[in-house]
Length: 366
Ligand SMILES: [Zn+2]
Image (cartoon, rainbow, N blue to C red; front, side, top):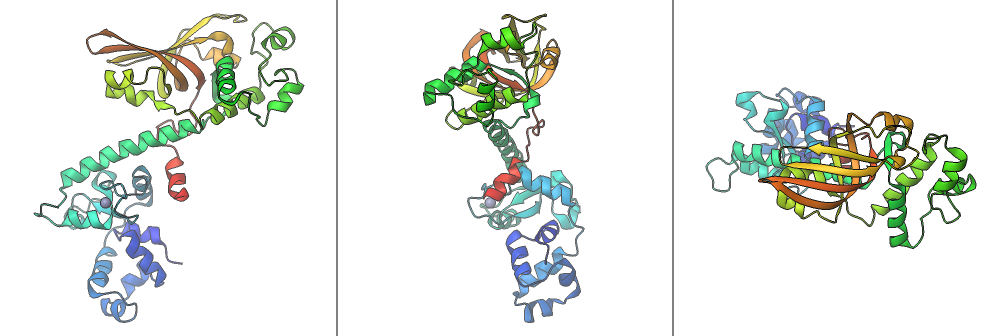
């Protein structure tokens, strides 16, 4: 079995690597065989045979570097975004023969057509190293944001990483959209234990009087958080969550366009400790501040999910927050305050650096 990925590491295009694979030859055979044999016995044309022989003389790109490069480019050309075809080449921005530079910064994913443009110097249709470098950076940011969006859309969080759920609001959203609370894998069991009423809404009074020991959610376990996580996942099929963090980085106009919209945010937020015991409502605000914007999520401490969630308040945490943007107000020149109602506050799982494994999945899903 010929290793296509290995040929890619030598700068062979994916289509040529596929072709070599179908003819049963890989790096080792290409090195060992003469150009003449590649032409006569394996049916490559002379130029392709020469290209293959040239590529396998190189130092290969490190496998992890290539994987990261492909992932962050979503396995398509960073210039045409795959519109010219699915084939890819790991292109050296500073020519390999001169630079011998296999580092991440010197590599970009191109399709064969844009690769030709990169090597056709002087033509008006050519691509300069600067253009490729910029296209790579821009495309990687887009892929990263898209990945964060997809991860948020899937509510890809651990149930024990969920610190806050606005139970009432999630239930209201379900009732408005579906006329009833949808079934989850936990619903029936939670009705049986009295935590949910027969119509699958949370029975706060029962919980407070029979299960809670002063602190409303002192008893909570993963069934409840998983139930609401599933409801939010279901809602995310019909509600589009916009990227609040990237909007905050693009400026006031973009933020203003989010008023009244559902959003997700991944980043550092600070809160004040609401005090104990929080058997009754106590205001709880999470804040994220940049030079341009201050984003506040106003919550109610009774919806904290656990004592450890309570323990994390009064500090700065890295959170994924789903919420509704209520108001976007100018507070000074170039400054804005955004007020939101949080639906769910969780510690992010796999996408702390905003590059989740989802890029691979997307590639495999085609
Ligand atoms: Zn292209």
